[in-house]
Image (cartoon, rainbow, N blue to C red):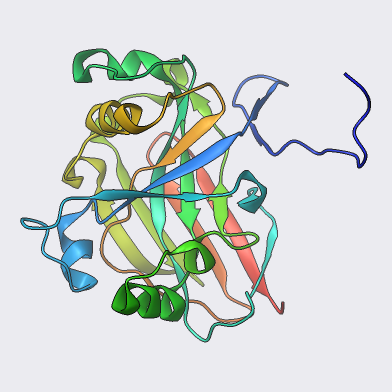
Length: 230
């Protein structure tokens, strides 16, 4: 294979307890996986099950980074989420085996152009420009499963300028991690390098330039960003 025409920088995440990094290939996201958030967004968690969408790996933004306020929006939102990283390939994975394909977990922030998302939903259009823009996929330090502790019993939260906006239990998810991995693997052959944002609880809200937004999950540390002028 010859050289690339342009230099390539592979998006990656810091791994707890090692100097190695986890290279990110694809970012999958689950929508409306907490009943209260589904209702908050005008949905019905009993009638409308969670669904999948994607962000490009280039949207990855690390802990401590400055996040530019995105263009073409006046309603820029935060969404704290548990992120699961795949470590073993598989397709049509059984629920009982799904967690053996997970390498580790991290805190995520699924940044969203809410006004553009609302317009896309109203018009039956894709969510790409509302979800997959630059700096829209915040991911903190990745904790291998053995170091992450009992994630299924953890709480997650998010603060803006020290004020709590979101707080819930991972156990409140409609689909648990095993169910998500199993179902997603029926659509895609999952590979190491795939990360999955597993959905956000209620309390999403707007961010302004100058805001400091900090997301956390028990046992997985925190993910903090400052919103700056784009």
